[in-house]
Length: 171
Image (cartoon, rainbow, N blue to C red; front, side):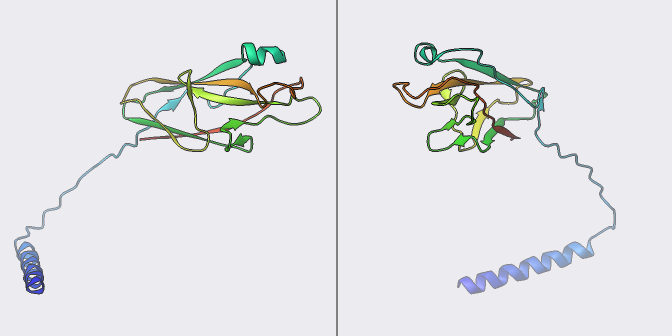
């Protein structure tokens, strides 16, 4: 029964295609379509975070932190901003940024990133923010220096240097 129905359906389609050809008037229909990808403009392509000066006691009592604000404009066609991170300083197992090693660099600390002040950003996966077609949106990432050891025994003074690439896409 299934085979018979399938065969008759094909015959019907071919008959209908034949009828369409014979009734054609030969007029051309031209369609112009402008497909616009959702996109935002980013005000600055690079951000630097300055933690200022601090000592090891500050890390436990008042951990140094600083914000990096990414300002998106002309986002009216965008529903979601997707972002993820790439780079050699990412420590995926601890979800933190390692710091540079060397003679003039600090040790015993790392950097955590937070979105909206208190939500820890997952550095190993795509993060998705709903902006709902808002014209402008500010993505504020807060960087915070954290000790690798809770006891802070192995912290040595020096410069803190780390970097990460922020990859952005839109929906």
